[in-house]
Image (cartoon, rainbow, N blue to C red):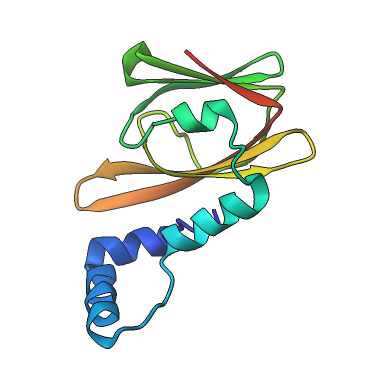
Amino acid sequence: MKYFTKEYQDSLQKGALLDFLNKKTTTGSFAKTAREMYEEHLKADFGGNLPDFWKKLRLHDCEVYLARFDENDFIMVFEEGDIKVTFKNAKIIEQEDDICGAFWVYDELYKSENGYEIHAMLAKYGGKKTEYLYLTVDCRDVILA
């Protein structure tokens, strides 16, 4: 994750971003937010040609029910089977801990030699502490079902 990091999420939880936005509004500063910087990245890398799967991929707050490989494809099932995402010809670049039971929070899309690199931040909620986990998958394509 380059834009929507654990530190970014922590700042949201602590209200720091709200303080920043208030200062931005009152001082007239045009500092860029993580969202604005990420939108610039997408425009620079993909122009107006975002892949169809990315336009439809809406996983925010969906719980990971299953995550496993089937030959070269990485399959994730969300919400007890309601949503299935297949990363074709996939390679896991980064995975922190077991992601089953975690909730998808943010995602970022990058071009890669294989096709695409999807960076995700997931959250495991437990008691007073939330654990944030990174998942990075390199793949040729993404199939949504």
